[in-house]
Amino acid sequence: MNVVTWLRRLEAVVAGTLLLAMVGLIFAGGLGRILHSPINWTIDLATCCFAWTCFLCGNIAWRNNTLMAVDLLTARLSPAARRAVTWANLALIAAFLVYVVYAGAELAWTSRTRTFQGIPGVSYSWVTMSLPVGAALLLLTTLQKARALAREPLAREG
Image (cartoon, rainbow, N blue to C red):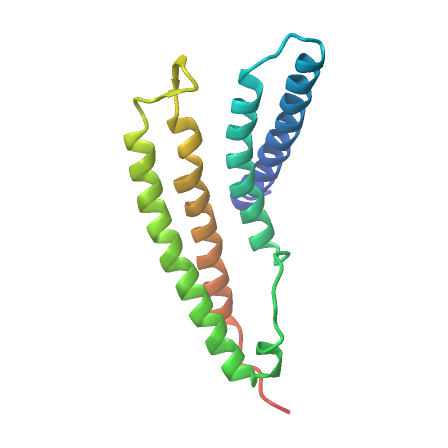
C-alpha cells in the first residue's frame, strides 16, 4: 500500500471516528439533561468534531466525485466547451481554497490564546484549525483533479 492510499484511509477513519464521537457526545449530553445532571461541555466538543468532520468528509466526497452536481447546461455543451467549463470551475475552486487556507490560518493564529469554552489549557485553535487544514486537503484534491483533467485526451464530437 502506498503512502497516498494509506493517508486516504486514515482520513476516512478519522472522519468516521469524529462522526461517531460527535453522535456519542450529543447523546451523552442529552442523557445527562434527562437525568438532571447536564454535561455542558459535550455540545462544545461535538461542535469541534463537527467542524473537522465537515471538512474531512467534504474532501472524501470531492475526491470520489460524490458531491451533488447540476449538469443541466454543461451536459448539452460540446466536449471542448465542457472541458473549458471544468477548467474554469477548478480554477475558481482552487483560488477560493487558497484564500480559505490563508484566512483560516490567520484565524487559527489569532484564536490561539482564546480558551475553548473556558477549559484551561485547551486553545480554540483546535476548532479553527479545521478551516485551513480542511481547505488545504480540498485544494490538494482539486489540484489532483486538474492534473487528471490535463492528462485526459480531449474527446471528439461524434
